[in-house]
Length: 331
Image (cartoon, rainbow, N blue to C red; front, side, top):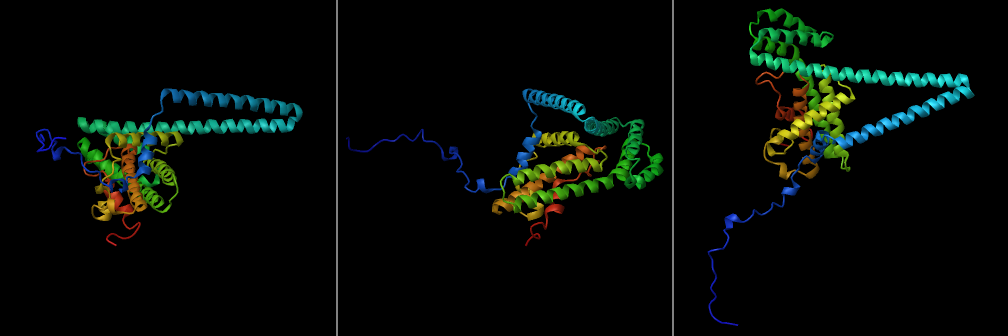
């Protein structure tokens, strides 16, 4: 082995600035709201054509088998015991009639949701075109939509009294929004706050596997349905699921399910996500994400777009619903 100085070429030595950052050991411990993110992915996922074909064939086949078996059972029973057989046949007929009525109700619910969606788009078009005649038609449809509701009677009377003084589309729709929809916004916000509290509490206090995901999914489905009911949608099962998928798809597409310290700043007063206990932090983050879902649901279910500056914020809902849930601020 040669002895003497060794020449080392330093010209190709990598710069320290080019080195990758050291992973933060605490990053994995920061609450991420995994329950709500899982719910968003599940609800926003659209099944493939092959999966939809599979379920269509499966339900059709099961329906055909059940129908044929029921018919054979009823006719055979009529041959053996005519009185009992006709009673069972009547029960089957009543069952089929009930299914048809449920189907009609679901179709009516989907039609109501479509009507509200069309009304919102017509209002946006009237505002963009500054079309007073179109705004008056939208207002008439809005009054018709809430004609049978006692909780909107005072607002409808006020709107009827003041609408003749409005000489432009924006003023007329703003008046309709203030008199008819502002009280409904308060009721819808309360539904969102209740759902956020429920999801936060269950996630933080129930350490069972998948319990937080199941609670978040059921609470968000129920919240979206109740928000639709507040605005007159009265969605059925399939309508609620369609609304949920639309809301979740919007949130996933816009990145609104991302977690940041600013989500809980109204509650905690600072950047404390990484310092919270695991379950406590997950509960607060899931509750805050539920509030975001609720605000999006209000936008989807509302028959008029929110006026400038009147859209509720998830931060405000988080502050009202989660402050004090696990202790007062600053405690």
